[in-house]
Length: 47
Image (cartoon, rainbow, N blue to C red; front, side, top):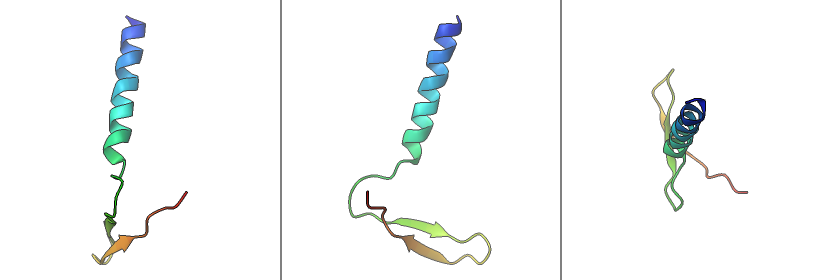
């Protein structure tokens, strides 16, 4: 039972990380400042 629970938790963790990952391409992430409401593009990280 512990093994099944561990696999389930790891799967949920992996899915949550995948949901936050940005798609590859020319898309730029839009960020909204919570203090002033200004929206701006975030430059892509280059490895």
